[in-house]
Structures are given as C-alpha cells and as structure tokens.
Image 1 (spheres, rainbow, N blue to C red):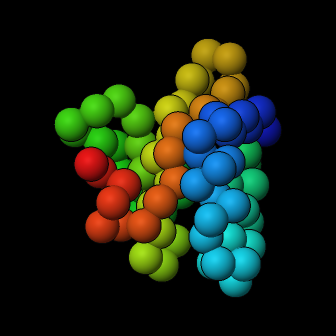
Image 2: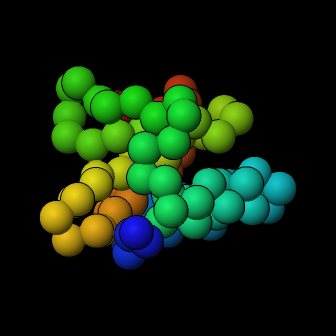
Length: 84
C-alpha cells in the first residue's frame, strides 16, 4: 500500500539550505517512505511525536498516520540541530 507524503513548509525551507548532493539523498529517502514508512533504522521518537530516519549527518522527522495512509514530514536538518 502506498502512503501519501506531505512536507511542511518549514521542512521544505530547511531542505533548500542543504547542499545539493545531500539534498538528493534526502529526497530519495523521503520518496521511499511512501512504500516503506518504517524502514530499517527508523526510530520512534520518545521526546516528541513522530519517527526519524537518518541520511548521513541529516535527520528527517515525520509522523505516520496509518488509518489514512499518510506521512507528514515535520522537520529536516543536521543531526546537531534537529532535536533542539
């Protein structure tokens, strides 16, 4: 079953600031979430709602809404800044 993906405006702005080579890897990982919302290495966050995936030094924070097959990307950023 394919999930619909939506990226919040703030996450899109953060994505635009990331170098092109890393940005392409992040976009590929986000597109893959449509087919596998909980890939190997995805982790449920404990301090806030959502899940995270790692792409090199960057993290993508997202929520999964299973009953409507929907993924909302909340934040994208460098690992040193993303959890603040």
